[in-house]
Amino acid sequence: MIQQQRLIGTFLELVKVDSETLHEQEISKLLQKKFREIGLDVIEDDSAVRSGHGSGNLIATLPASAATHAQAPVIFFTAHMDTVTPGQGIKPQVDDDGYIRSDGTTILGSDDKAGLAAIFEAISVLREQQIPHGTIRFVITAGEESGLCGARAMQPGLLQADFGFALDSNGRVGDIAVAAPTQAKIHIVFEGKSAHAGINPEDGISAIQVAAKAIARMPLGRIDSETTANIGRFAGGGATNIVCDRAELFAEARSLVQPKLDTQIAAMREACESAAKDYGAKVDFTSEIIYPAFMYDEHAPVVQLAAKALKSIGREPRLFHTGGGSDANIFNGMGIPTINFGIGYEHIHTTKEQIPVEELVKTAELVVRLAQEAVAP
Image (cartoon, rainbow, N blue to C red; front, side):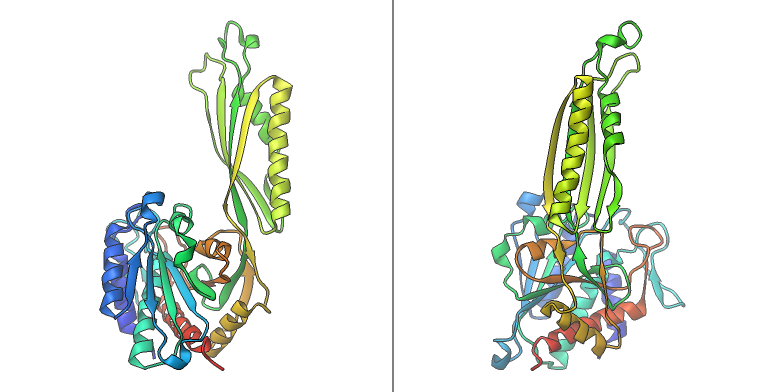
């Protein structure tokens, strides 16, 4: 069914195109060209104006194969076009052990060009073998690696579908991320009072000291099985002979359960406000929800459809909860039930990144089978 060499060729072609996040111009042009060459309508939305990335999101549509399937559920597949760094001048190679790797000086880019390659191969197979299917949309986002920027900037009305499947998770084909947390970005500014550190330090209020006390009072790390929190950056101060009057913290909190996230944010806020009060400092605490959570079980229709397709390609479904976010979070927030598939890449975001050819093939098989199962009686 799947033409392995064609699939590998598409993957190698894609990873050779530089597309570090914020610089998606060239890969976007290539993807649009490839969609049109296989007969799909494709549009680029206007999200780049809001996201600041090199391309908008691409939405391509494969019409239902026959009038009888036009009433079938509309499904969509999503993958992202950008990569992390270092992703310039990637030199992929297919090794004798069945893995595809870079030359070790860059990432490979299988996150997420493996998903893209599988999509193109699946479309070709559906058309060549005249496999019945309903309407299928393909949503290729920009800026996923820089905080889901493309998906977050998409106008919800552009995507009309009943179910969604992201091809963008670690784990072998068969693994399904059925739950992912909501995330809050937190910015905290402490304002103290400057003074000479050697002559009259008692007249100053060290914003660094206040911030440190606040951090010590915060619950951080693994809060429980569904909740985490982290301080990512601490900035402030200058010359050692000046009591620092301003310090900033950049943090996050995540949870699968919104009330738990609210409780965690409140605890972090209280730690900051109590420390500021104790030292006579001021604090400005702001938090923003970046993306919503989602959670499904084995009874959800989107999961049942996925499980049936996986079993038909010889893989046993394994449901898991992830602590990371993906474009699936955004599309769930738009009201479209969406889950995220493991597609077999390994050691992503490092120069040791690799993917087995077998998993690349299985991903393409999965896309084809999902298209078939969506119209099955």
